[in-house]
Length: 218
Length: 218
DNA sequence: ACCTGAACACCGTTCAAGT
DNA sequence: ACCTGAACACCGTTCAAGT
Image 1: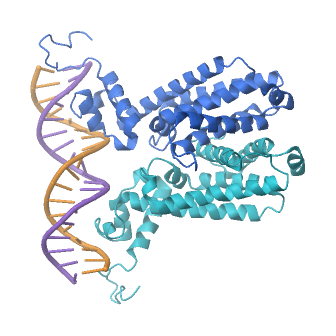
Image 2: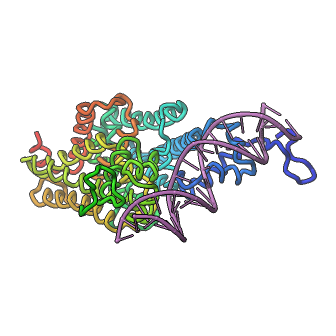
Image 3: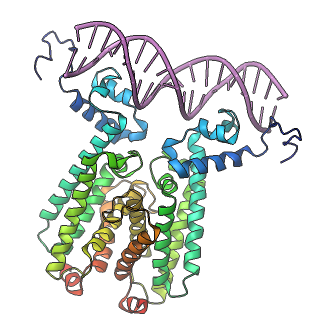
């Protein structure tokens, strides 16, 4: 932000914080149209620079996409934490709340979820920050399940199995909702989607919970 | 196939069955590298024609991709039927077998599953045959669940909810496996993936099954 | 250090023209 | 009826040159 905005109103040669401007522009465009439908050239244009300028801040288009996906993981993890904290009941009920938040996130930002999990980022492994952000999300789920097992609300067994089952359910549900593959719920009404998600995570809870845990839900 | 192959060995002007040749070439390339990494021009070249010839058989690239995705749905539906028929136990056990087959399909042909459910085909609704093929797959699942409810192995409730829950679980699991998001199972060993899938669908069965149904599994 | 403009090798798509 | 070749408007990426 140092000496980049001239008083004349003309745009200066140096942008100031082009990296952030690219993130903002890309995020906006991708949330609207999806990663495949947005070019680096258009992002640069919206950010107000030439089409080659982005390469001073990102190695290639993949790196920019990975950056946005990482931000998406942080956002989802934050929503996850909020939904868990907002639920004053036990871990099993918190797991259900967390699952609904996951589906809600997908329904609100379908193109972002596609970017985070779809094939747009070809070499996931070469973006360590992205791997880290994804792993943190899974760890939060595992923590919840271990807590549930400790207090007898959740079934015994390898926490990794319970984690993967819970994650798979909400992940698959979110993607099926996004893809409009659900007959009878083609619309985007958020309330309807949330009701569907509620019923699915309730069935999940039947599978993961102990009899005592399930009884406590009602 | 009429008068298209000259005895001299030189390629004739007319291909004969270019549509099928394009499908074959595209299927091969996409299964190896994914839809985003394959161009219509390369597909045409592999099929042995100029890059414009494809437009005589497909409206655009999306139409070719939709055609391949539809074939994928038929293949998956067939695997689904086979796995159910091969299981001589009750509907709950058949549901588990079906789920494992779904995950196995995804693990074997990750790029195809991405094509079928990812964002590569932007306007799904404008390819009716594709919608139909996807709906048929969901219907097979619902049939299984209704049968399970009828014989008391599966929990009562709206079959649509049970269907969506089961589908979401196996769909999410397949995609997480494909994306190598599963810590501890980064490898491609099919046997390992199948064991993981087995444990997840077992937990699903705990949620969807009645006590009697679950008892019958053991 | 940061950005621009021209250039390169690609795309998807169209269309007159060939067989 | 089916395919080709040239053309158009785009891409992502590179690099000398400008500030």
